[in-house]
Image (cartoon, rainbow, N blue to C red; front, side, top):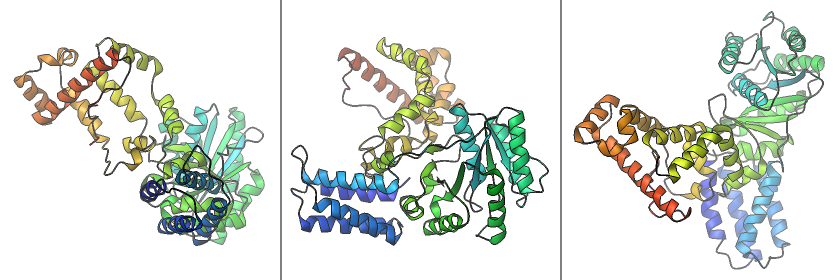
Length: 441
């Protein structure tokens, strides 16, 4: 997400840190470079102009603090303006009288149906009892797709008569009330382009249900087209927020940076992957940190808390401290890391890691390691020292990998054990020579 934008800002920020003082000349040079970065990232021209004007105004009037360098102060100004530009703070979902309704709108292809399921799952994790319903009577597979997603995440889906969108929405709300469900997510019909029939239908559903939330799903990869469609919806219905999808594949990120400024509506969620769990609350301050290569430790900790079993982690720590860490434990640890999402996304949340040149991480390597370990006997997993040449050949044949792959894993594991012993001896100080994790260069 924002890889190209982050890469350009990383180089720019490193140069900026070397500035000895804030002058009118280097302020102008700074805002000129920021404007160029924004335009290359497909940020709208008006939004880019407004941003650099604000940065220039704050920079010229800023007093340099004694505790930081002028270059660092310029970075802080840019960071603060980015946060303001993106919306200051996360705005949570608004709920009305139970069952509260959430209207999901947008064009075809933006990912409305999948996003409806992702949002329902996210709300359930927060203690809500959601019901999903599709009012898309035009796309043949729309209702079937939502039903399939509902079964996948174990969330009820209401179908109705499949003919009248307004009637389906009304009946879904009554159905939710009868089951004591507290919110209804309505996946509405879309079009390839804005048309009068679509807008009239959405306006009718909105007038009847009066939803506290009407969220526009926008494809983050469509650039300026996303902004134009958002403005068209805003003119006809009362939008309360935005959901940006497909940001895992958006290398430029201009739509995300300018759509909130153009519409004046908050970005509430971002889709960062294809899985039903790949929907995140949008936090402007955290996103600004990611864009500027400062990482996002808070989101990293939240992902870890959601994905990692605390008791299992404590048991793993005990084994590490007593030198009882086995290959089975190693595999378990890798699988828990995999649950947190793509490794390159996780590393991007660590301050400084986004700027590492040519950093490429392959999640598939975790599965390779798992298959090698699964090909071993229990004795071999508990005591890798017994694995001789013939055993290595058997393990490689059993998992369809090469003997070199087996040797590489055993070498990494031996290095990790050695590192853990050193950490124990040095009271937790990280030793040099940290072994490579699977999938990392």
